[in-house]
Amino acid sequence: MALKKITWRSLALSCCHRCEKTRSVDADEKLLKQASFQRLLLSDVSNPGSGISVDDVSLGAITAGLHKFAYSELRMITHNFSWSNLLGEGGFGPVYKGFIDGKVRMGLEPQPVAIKLLDQNGLQGHKEWLTEILFLGQLQHPHLVKLIGFCSEEEQRVLVYEYMARGSLENQLFRKYSAALSWSIRMRIAYGAAAGLAFLHEADPPVIYRDFKTSNVLLETDFTAKLSDFGLARDGPEDDGSHVSTRIMGTQGYVAPEYITTGHLTTKSDVYSFGVVLLELLTGKKAMDYMRPRREQSLVAWAKPMLRDPGMINRVIDPGLEGQFPLKAARRVALLAHRCLSRVANHRPTMSEVVKVLECFQDSDIAITGPIIYVVAHPTAAEGCHGEDDVDARGNQPRCFFLP
Ligand SMILES: Nc1ncnc2c1ncn2[C@@H]1O[C@H](COP(=O)(O)OP(=O)(O)OP(=O)(O)O)[C@@H](O)[C@H]1O
Ligand SMILES: [Mg+2]
Image (cartoon, rainbow, N blue to C red; front, side):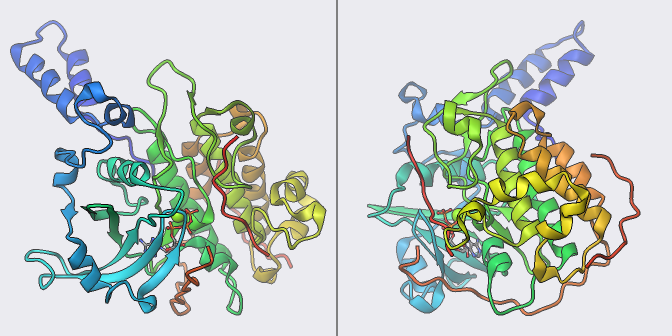
């Protein structure tokens, strides 16, 4: 369920509505107090006048809640960043598994962690690192990955997260040589990821995630989905604004068409990307795959025309499910994906509406079976609810941050 972020401002404002006439010194003090508790925005950090520059890592209240690790500590817990600890690698750099406890530093809760190291020669840098700290240091939710700490020593920039035992949705959905994810598990993942996005969109001001894709959805042992990677996230427009204008960034196959053509970024851009991932969950096919026949290379271009036709569902659905899916539910999810993928941004549902629809397809008796399969990347590889849904029926994507 999406949670509305309670800010000091919202508390203070509700207080003002209730007792406008008897507003006291106390209320004024509350208003003053809330100002210092409001979310620190990206624009505050990039604005030199605010006294905080992108190079300033002592973001006080934010970093106070995080552990500041020494590089030597991280080197020790990853066995000198050994290949056997490598979990994967993305645009930011390599990600290693480690374990922290009281032996590393007094008072550390024993737990496995994922350690993401900035690749000094990569396309991302200090700005993405700081953006991640800024957002994940302030926003906590059951469907956002938890940032535990960071490291900033000379050129080194590192992020330390809670470890997600099943890795990314990309690895789980598209892995070869193992049983396909069941329908119930796919719906659980879709719901969790939707709830994470809805939470971001309902924050004040909204957060536009901008890089929603299967590799950024991480999974716990029980397939609870959490969003990771806030390096491209942006604060949405405040109150009356409809969009923010940005340099076009994202991953091919997932970016909303109007964002590509106008550079205008809204929460509805994220809804489109969510529609692409929902389609990947339905079909078991990647958003872009140049190994497929030409007219099928773009998943949206190939599948979207079939989503509204109930008779076409068996052509769209992942053959790996071997017919084990509730037909009516699948049709409803296909319709939901179709709405998310609307070319007209305003015709797309909000993420809260998406959450409500997906809530109907959550299976309380979900069987979490199968081993946890670790997929280790090679270092160079870079609508309302009606129930009654129980009828059974019978390459490679380039990662690309692109600029116009
Ligand atoms: N917290 C985590 N727990 C477990 N595995 C993780 C965690 N974070 C990242 N990984 C693993 O590391 C891989 C690389 O993650 P990363 O987010 O850096 O790149 P990516 O999402 O694959 O690519 P991109 O840079 O385009 O977002 C993930 O696919 C996942 O397998
Ligand atoms: Mg990622």
